[in-house]
Image (cartoon, rainbow, N blue to C red):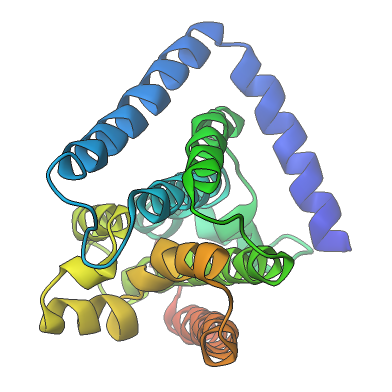
Length: 261
């Protein structure tokens, strides 16, 4: 409860700072609609020539894009403002030193204490595309499918946070190593069904860098119905990823000796 109150207070302060720059709101809206519009147009173009895309219907593909957009919006709001710059600001410039002196979890402060409320604007077009896909489906999603989708989206958010923490932890061992470009490039693959990729890349995106769990698995669950092995696997993957992130953070702190040392 303490961490939830801290998260709420941090979001409130970030929101007040964000609305002070209203012109940014206009540009964020334009960028959100432009980026999503490009992805939707590409999918619609494919379905002018084919009925399915690697076994995915047009409705399922739209649900996939909408789900991806929702998770991307939440990632851009709560995770990226903290961990994207951690190697430079946290380790090299010593911001982590201040976190370690605070009466709260250093991992929480380093990964979730800041937010970018304007990024939530991406939720609006994402929900629109998601609704479009659901309405276009041959049959509406079942209650079980909806609950499974919600559970797997929550698991995807945990995995997203854990991956960002693990990449940030590399700074404890190599402070000048930044893999943000690689991470952001791989993240873009999440808006496409993993079935369209070759088997080696599909295995990589499922078990090593689990982009399949980000959007493909929840989207398939929503319209095709839940499967118990997928649900259990998604929750287990989220738990394992979170445990790995906490372990890596603890190991990094034992190695960390301060920015000035």
